[in-house]
Length: 276
Ligand SMILES: C[S@@+](CC[C@H](N)C(=O)[O-])C[C@H]1O[C@@H](n2cnc3c(N)ncnc32)[C@H](O)[C@@H]1O
Image (cartoon, rainbow, N blue to C red; front, side):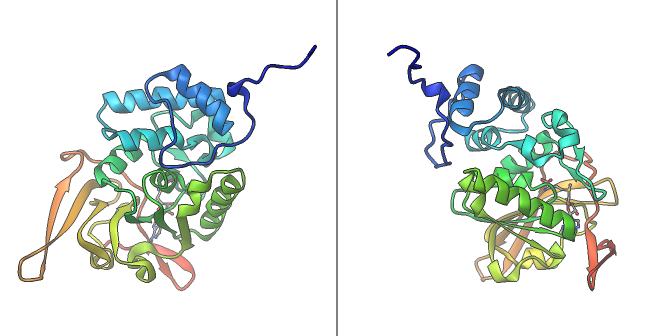
């Protein structure tokens, strides 16, 4: 038939929803980009940058699990970065997202996500939703992600980003439940959690978060003085007598990583921090 274009699987125009067994090509840059363009209708330029960033993260040992590599490849970081910074979405940098806070750099997100060790079905709590990117990565590892943000307009803006992506077919983000609150007190209604990830810095481990961690659960929390934290991995082990023992390790072996401060809500006003 004259003029009829042959069907080309690389030009399919329907969005392929996320499933746990998606056949994502993860061994070859071109195959990955073509597959994502065809099935997820994403921009080839950003996809290439995403692929290239992952290769550096793997070489740098910031990502070491296949599940996390795949989560990184599936997550459109460019959608979680304000338009003015979008061309830098895959740089090895944190970026300004407004309201005086940042989206963490991809290497830090990769290192923390790999260190967290999230199994499918695990219940995960994040403190500090920010741009929404960290929870978006987690949504490719488990279907129960809870995230708390203290800055109300930022929490609302990010909820809008998830909802916009869900309406475009990114069903995986239905796994992310968000609220605007002071995350110091955790989220009692959904506790206990298998994993907790804190993305703002504080000088101690918040006792309510420790309390809301399941036995054998693990929490990542940046602990230290302002702007100079160490990212600790806290594991709550159950002892034979039914008590709990806490073990701590440093995911960067002593390297200092500066984080946005863990702020405090008094009434409906953000006032100071939770540092002692
Ligand atoms: C490094 S930033 C955002 C990182 C974020 N996970 C991302 O993927 O973009 C840390 C966030 O923690 C938030 N934050 C600070 N104190 C908080 C608190 N007490 N409860 C909840 N969020 C808090 C900040 O407003 C900021 O958005």
